Amino acid sequence: MPLKRRPTDALIIEHVPHETAGTILPALNSSGISGRSVKLWRGDRLPQNIDDNTLLVVMGGPMGVYEEDRYPFIKDELRLLERAWHRGVKTLGICLGAQLMARALGCRVYKGEAKEIGWYPIELTEEGRRDPLLLGFPERLTVFHWHGDTFELPRGARLLARSSLFENQLVRMGRNWYAVQFHLELTEKMILEWLSLEENLEELEEAGLDKNRIVEDTDLYGTRLKSYGNAFFTRFLRL
Image (cartoon, rainbow, N blue to C red):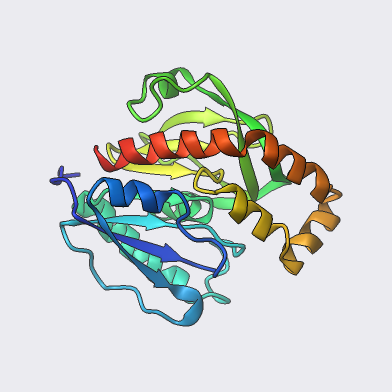
């Protein structure tokens, strides 16, 4: 995979209105990178190819990678990601975005044994402790999750962090593809907005989870999550 010069633009792919780039945006601004959003939920079309000066940011969503028939744009995303990989385009995936990256490299995406929703710890692997994006991070940190699917590791990928329920929480693929299964991009305000959505409240009820507990944990961990996200995203953009 050829190495590219540092990009000047970012293409941000959004699948639903409430899963936006969050704290990735100020990192883009401080790095002098302009961001453009493609909102698939309102019918925006993806480009066929991606410019050499552009990086990709693929956000999350409630759909599964395996639901191509219900969400035809998934096939277009996978084609774009395949092209991005072969061109060496710097790419960041969050939750569904991470799963799409794995699928684009030929790996299976599938339902996990249970859903992981709320604040849970992840642990850095030995590889993760050495990764330049995670230097100085604690070996164990509590982050926000909202997912039920997981993915196989692509060949040659490096596992950087895991949780007790989902093994592949943070993965580096190649030199400049980072797949983040959890939600490092969220602000406290965004989390509270998620917790106000009817479909999310139904999902919490089905999973037997307490909204109030998540709100309390957000007060406890939200500021640190923002700090971790700012460091991680800024370092990613400077790769």
